[in-house]
Length: 530
Image (tube, rainbow, N blue to C red; front, top):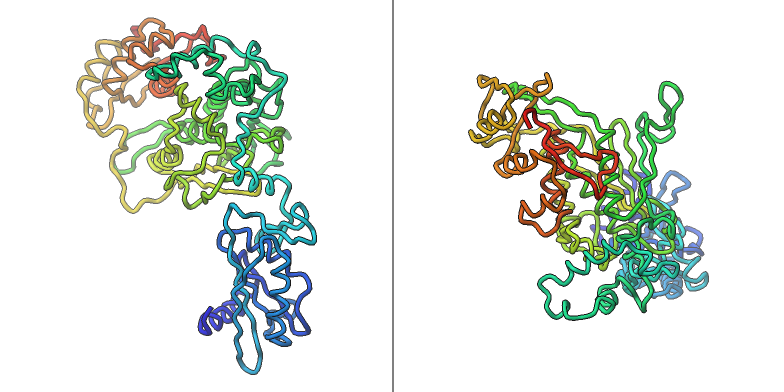
């Protein structure tokens, strides 16, 4: 730190009159503070490190008292730094101003692989600290474990589940997974199924892994009751607020099952509790009916929580939480960001993967792409809805995604939503011939088609691909039939990508609506005349 930088820092302190995430103030007028260990640990354990300024008395209104002896103070500071593990190497700067001496100790953040930095006299569990605002807080046992897990590359998703056996898994689902694994891999296809299970972490030393239980067990919560999702709708903007009749929750559900089942049922919960609203473009008068939040963004956030949450024994009793408030929705999953990734880097660089075996299995099953596109997809979907940017927060031991219902004021308004920009006359012909819906052609414009169904007038936009799919579903179709029709090997991907959007728009109905994942499910077009 140069003399000019130090002077500027002193001026800033007198202006803000407070400590911050990266700034600690010590008096040192009568001697060196005896306990710098907490701050040395906390600053070392954050990426940006921090600065300790000696010679400012916080108790007397941030008076510039100066230090007792800058030379001896530096010696005492270094002595305490040598008591840390790993040793802290501060950059010390002395400033003489108006007959007073000030000392600044710049504490660098240490490498992630070396954290946590702790005071040897207390040991790692009691001597590790983290900076929270302007205070130094003891690290939790889980926070300390997280550093250890990253350094040693623990894979909690493939830890053994002794109570589970291969026979306790759904054999049809497991066989389908192994079949998909063999596709296009001749070397793998020639191996026995048991060996494939070992190689791909379905089993480990013949014991069933956690990933296999989460994907193929009929009821994973029999082994881990906390590995579920709790979803609530709060009648207000904060937990604890009550409704008109004293109710704490407008809807409250515990969502269980395998990861694919939890994903589907969580989306059903959100769809059920989102409001449908009509947006009128003030310039064109065009109408667009939509839900509070884009379901694409919601799906990605829930999927990310299920894939990237911490599955260690420290968090196995902590469910993922979905909290729907009047003004926002929060999705919270146990375990903060993993590895070197920071919140600012989300969606812009490839992250370390906490659960690689689970992520790969879900990719094989066609449930997720595993190409780090989730965050960009969320941001894009919210932007297309003209909603505030989603907020991502890495809190102590948890990661939180927040969607806001509040819209943003744009400097440049698009006259037509991107979804409805193209004009496709074949859509109109299809609607007339296929659905028998009476058209009001005078209201058809380049971005949308207006039609009537069930006595209600709605906005309608159907792509050529959707037109083919709707026509195919004039008679009830199974997942397998739809997958084959679309030329996709993954029926899960086919349903999630092509069918679910049509269900959300009311164009396809489920034969078993209360059980979206039912093996007996059939999908049928709902337009009149079908």
